[in-house]
Image (cartoon, rainbow over all chains, first blue to last red; front, side):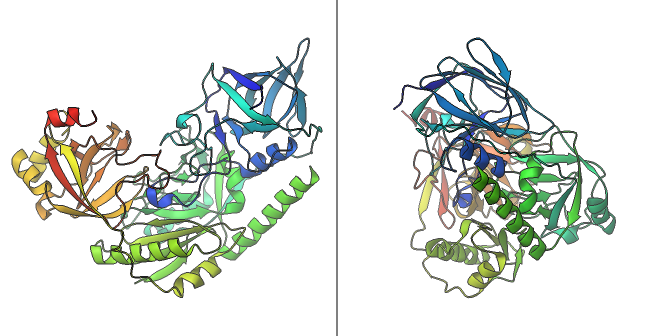
Length: 314
Length: 224
């Protein structure tokens, strides 16, 4: 155990520990969880010389304000985030995608994400937190993962098991691009919807509702009419599935989703667009664009190559 | 048998066993589930069996729809499904403190409280699947005269341990959660225990469950 730790002065709105998440548990009712925006999660770890699956602090909208105690350590923040670093005599504005060295008594104040939802803070070292099913990811609904499955709270202290010896400062130039069209494939109940309903789905704009969280993103807009049955017998879900309940407003399943559901599935978001989808804040406009499976597979490969390329530059 | 295999997005295979809900079809789903789980085919990262569907999710970096579909189509099914299935007795207290929807059920089913409990308790229910929230078992089938719809407006909070019914099914709320099923009673038993990582679920697909009534005193003393 190192003698280093962080104290949470302000916890932020939805601050949790996340890593890649846990698999092979859908059949007992436990979703993947894990960092919502996988690319930004990986980059954060790489910037501080962590192994890529290390635990990071994920925050949404307002982030935490922390005080660091212990030996010198690096940290980095990714996403589109406004934050400051307070040292003994100075306070500087921080930049994302750059690692900084902090020392005993320094504070990091993550003020907010900018026109996006999630940001990531990686500390160069290993947090002393609990793992459940090989993952520290916090699932607040089932109280699974580190921190007893609960959000971080003001006044908490988190110890570091060890800190990285390699303290090279790293940076990368990267901009989170906004996306106008979310690409989707047809869902398994596509034919439950009227011709007009399908047309609305692909041609009209939807607005991301405030009732969105790590479980799901609710959309508001013109109603999508179901002409067959507004319920199906409950069956498995995966992240990215777009269900349309009887009220006609789509809900997109996100990383902490319920593992089964009984609403018809009109579409499924292509994996390539998932990281950018989750960053769309309430009030953002979404339009869906249909693609086929082989295009989705190719686009994902390209996206993954781009991610690997970014990581190799760090 | 599987009637149709299609893609659910780009990272999951959707195996459709038909639209009926019965033990025969569900046993097929469970047979596939158990065989695939045991084989641990490259890239598969999750399996979700339900009444009559099986969803096989995979890591798109490691494999793809075509490979998984081909694997499922050519699989040698193992007939091991009954080996691990258990018969479980679940204590349930139907005291008025817990049976929050008993009045509604009496009205809708046109049955007295006693008749409802008689038709519900001491019967064998088959576990079709677990999920929605961690460890929640979907059990069936209820007596034909016991079938009601979900509440018109779901509760924001259903107490942990609630035993509830809807259509031909009954379930147990393993956590406090939103929900629209009709609540009959409550079990003091922990049906999901996250500290047991290899076996967090008490009830698993293929198991048989019998509800046994306990008094409010027995309920209170249960965990002591």
